[in-house]
Length: 244
Image (cartoon, rainbow, N blue to C red):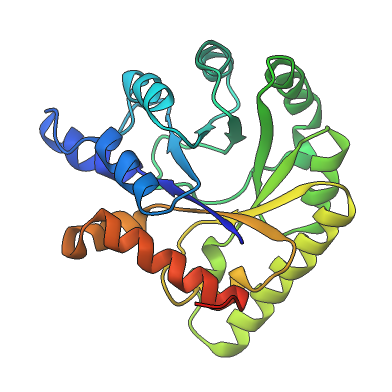
């Protein structure tokens, strides 16, 4: 079974629009767990546009599954991660002007810096993951610096429209997943996935974890968090070819 980690960032996005206490990312995380999610993902951005430092602390303490903390490769974030001790740290690139993460880390050009961060993170017993585009060079660089896993960016795949373009990008993801597994890396995927486009991704045998947030939070407005998470798990099982 592929693990589903539910990202609750955009529950905080709604809350921060009014700078109030509702809706609660913690409540959303607990409902996601109750509905079958095997983990919770949150992205503490440098500009604190949605998730806040206190969210990370209270979610870490309250959930019974595992916390995947997404963050930029900066000293501030490394210090926070060492203090909070999540199950896993996932490094992602950040631009202040972007609406959401626009692409994967360029691990190839940051090997020295990322290796130093990896040493500090793993020394505290925290798993170390890198969010990368589906490129073999990025996979190989991730292996060289000693990452535990890579999360393959499915963003471009989810934005393409023609069957031909989608097929080409899907093949890039498959090749990257296979290469990562061959290099001894655990393979995750995420970004832009919904009930339908998740199925071909879930069918890739090397992928063992999916991080999905925006679509689930959006669906939760209509059907509730529990139903949205359960339906996503159902779609993942269909994609994986599991008995429903």
